[in-house]
Length: 609
Image (cartoon, rainbow, N blue to C red; front, top):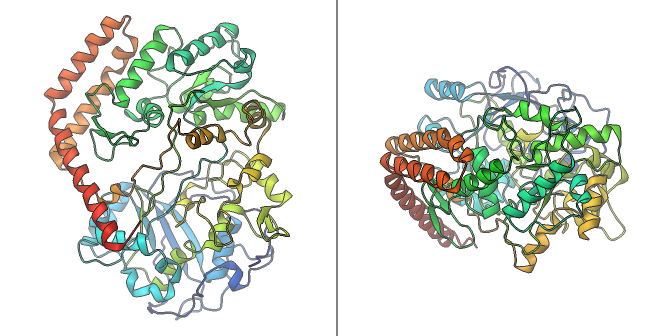
């Protein structure tokens, strides 16, 4: 199916203030015939690039009473950018035209959502809610039963496995479908992986790219790079690592969690080794990522590799130092990506940037390849029962369940950004390659270099970009090895040439194929949907323990000797246990076991593989 071309694929933005989304004229009529079976731009007759920004010329349907084009307001409850410069992006313009609607996006805080729940009156038509919010929505009767609208939502109906799990676990026991969920299917790493041993590539090459097979190897390499380059671009000192605070334990734990291949806490106080199934007390066991991280940071600090502002920097402070070329390494590639972006403006062929290096003998896990049946673990979407255009709101959700529309979302417009070759295989065009080479990551396909918007629309996409289209290629055409190789920047190309791969992430993917490393294909993210809300007493224990741990981080990291470190560690663990860490772990282990059994039973009940 061919779609007409528009100039740019995507650029998402957030409306800064609350807008009224349900105050549209028009009635509700379940079973409307306005939706086609596909809901796609191709089947509705996509417009040329002169299409109206507002979509007001796109439909004769409008509302039942006035003929006006109805506005469907989507409320995003997560964090996102509020950049308005390029709203609406061309994909949204196409959706507006295809469905005969105008789409607005608002961002609402937890407090605003709580007020909507308490009052039973909301200013949106569609909303996404995070974990444990579903019972609130259902108890207040705020969600439309989507089973009553599947005749106008054939694409939603096709997601039988996901829908059955949602009916089973997110219906307050009545077995009906009130929520959709996004990003079903395998997560693809894209061109590179953020969680390896991150090094500044040009300095690492100067050393001859020595193997890094352990934390000790990594810290020694960072030390050599700092000694070779003691001064940064601004004339100040260089350091091995920087860190920002303000995110609780997360920023300290996250790297080791993914390097070790652990769950990111299905329930508080418990970590699961995804490869072995072993469970650990996240606060007191030596194997826990927190203690693995503390040991690493203590070694780094005693080698003089940590920025003196390690314990006080915010993310903006860290970035200020990043763009000055202050660091030899980093905890995550995304922390330091702005340095390459800056340097590439001055020299498009620069190798001044950061990459993830993995142990040559394997053993390090990485964050990709989880394959949730019911989608992202912390997101459920519903249509508000007070909406005055329920049919249209349902059709908006259905539109984002259609594989052709998702191909457009992830890969651009057919005939402009991609086309079928002589073998009927979809491939990127030169324009598509150029767009993706300059437009950020595959999840931020704005076509505008440096854009940080786009994240909210991924919450509407029913499939992940790594899912196969019926034409045999992934929805996100940039994920093919050929496309990835053709859209790499010079730094990524140089890295790939050194390791003899097509694109950087393939280094780790090859290790997984060889059986010497692990991805997250064993990550049962669907358990998040099943796990019940943490009881108040256990939630209090979690908060108290994590506050305690965070307060001790400077003492642990700055401990001058192994003996001093061990003394502080033993004191911290003793205090954690006094606060009830063992009781929390016992509750969490039972909750996890029950959820795992319930999930296994549900898969058997519905014949889910």
